[in-house]
Amino acid sequence: MVHSPVKTVRMPAGDRVPALGQGTWGMGENPALRGQEIASLRAGLDLGLRVVDTAEMYGEGRTESLVGEAIAGRRDEVFLISKVYPQNASLKAMQTACTNSLRRLKTDRIDLYLLHWAGSVPMEETLNAFARLQSDGHVRSWGVSNLDTAAMNELWALPGGGGVQTNQVLYNLTRRGVEWDLLPWLREHGVPLMAYSPIEQGRLTRHRALVDFARNHGMTPAQVALAWLLAKDDVIVIPKTASAARLAENLDALAHPLDAAAQAQLDRLFPPPHGAVPLEML
Ligand SMILES: NC(=O)c1ccc[n+]([C@@H]2O[C@H](COP(=O)([O-])OP(=O)(O)OC[C@H]3O[C@@H](n4cnc5c(N)ncnc54)[C@H](OP(=O)(O)O)[C@@H]3O)[C@@H](O)[C@H]2O)c1
Image 1 (cartoon, protein in one colour):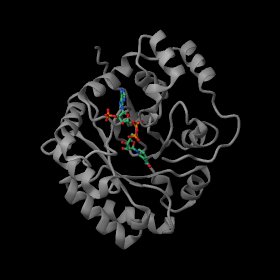
Image 2: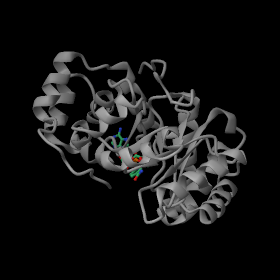
Image 3: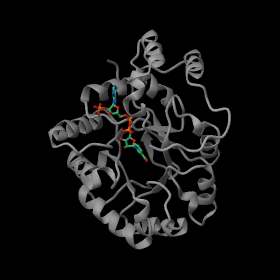
Image 4: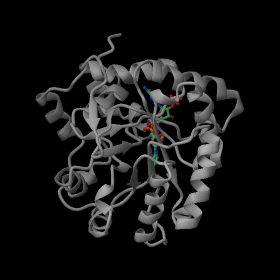
């Protein structure tokens, strides 16, 4: 197993973060898995996977508590992302939601705080709420998740909207709709995309065509799915695993860059979109 240095992506505000991070959805829900999940997150930090993505929604706070335990004593190594529920995205409610997240995460700051998806709170108010948390030092930067191109245009037009650091969206070999307009929009505006469910919540590891492709390339299906995303310069990829072995397997995707021929073959197996596709969510 060869561990290449983790390539980095530059965030608009200047942070350089590893392009491969760690998701946490589902962690902290099963007490029997707690030790293994914490060990896996810590092993990820040991290997340079410093981006840890969580949300107040995950396990209704239980996941953030587990992350807080996993990063205890190592806070400065982590680029910590959490997300606020849309119904908590108002000036008043976001203050409370963030305080609760910080308490569970056992830290005094979140590096990147995302609006989990668009809700009914006007975006202007959400931007003011982010700004207040930033000036109080509770949040270093902010971004969004699950916003389509039209919503990104609206956001960008608002005062302060250009401060957005990322849009975290569903993107993997079987979910390529973002390539039609959202990814080009983000590139044009210098905003990195953060790809969630990069192995389609594990389903891609059982995809017949991908299994065959991976075998022919001396890789595992998860490695192909991740390497395909990691080949893009401005995409951050956050697979979740509670297994140290699968973590190492996923990291090894970096040691298997896909050449142009392999990427063309994947385009035939998983065709890019031929028109606009509504943004998908999981
Ligand atoms: N913003 C949003 O709305 C949103 C939505 C969904 C997800 N997310 C974020 O994105 C992260 C990743 O997405 P995800 O968790 O939905 O899906 P994912 O990362 O595509 O897949 C995770 C699943 O795949 C399994 N897995 C991981 N590596 C594997 C490997 N090498 N071989 C076989 N199985 C493997 C994991 O099981 P084990 O743990 O047992 O290895 C887990 O069941 C989430 O955890 C969350 O942080 C954000």
